Length: 258
Image (cartoon, rainbow, N blue to C red; front, side):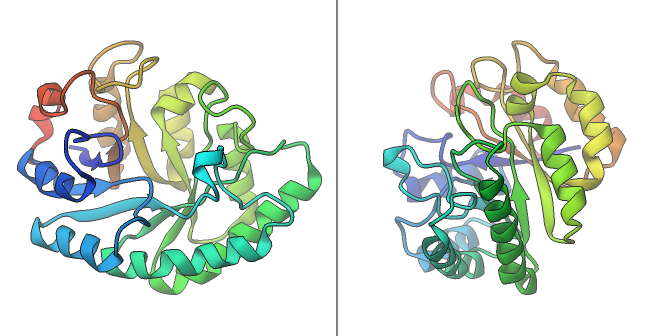
């Protein structure tokens, strides 16, 4: 049975961020993820996880200036010093939360730009070297071009080939079912093919990015398929509740004890 992690950047938004940990635990989640922790002290987040018996599954490395539309710096030439500092910024949060997966965002720049791809590979290697000794995987996630126009990593096939070519033991694929369906479709076949390099899976309905209980895909089939494939990781619930978070958790009831 899949193990689900509540995404606290999207779920339980009825509450201030630091109160969402308790709400997730009370709702039956045993793990959480979120986009960014950097507005809050690392020790405070670590304390919340411990107090409510939660596993921190994932968060993102610093993305640059999010408010100005930046979505990562890893592939952006000229941002090397800022990128290296971002790794140091993330370290105390990784230690305090015990997280084992960090998402490295590429940035908005064309994949046809050779300098960007070279910069991206260098940044990935540096992140992998920095966090490998802590037992942390670096995850690369393709994002769909509708929600994230101009993002470098916009193909699951390219990402899989890129990761395989890098052949770094702690660089893996973040497989978001929502993004993959919009980009390519054929989710089940891609899960079967890419499972050896998948480090984390996320889910939401398509096209509305709500609870995984309706719309284009049979989410119950996909969850059963993960069991058939022997996927032992977490599934992040990176969706926007249609109404209140608690009101939309009917889909989660069969999995609550997983």
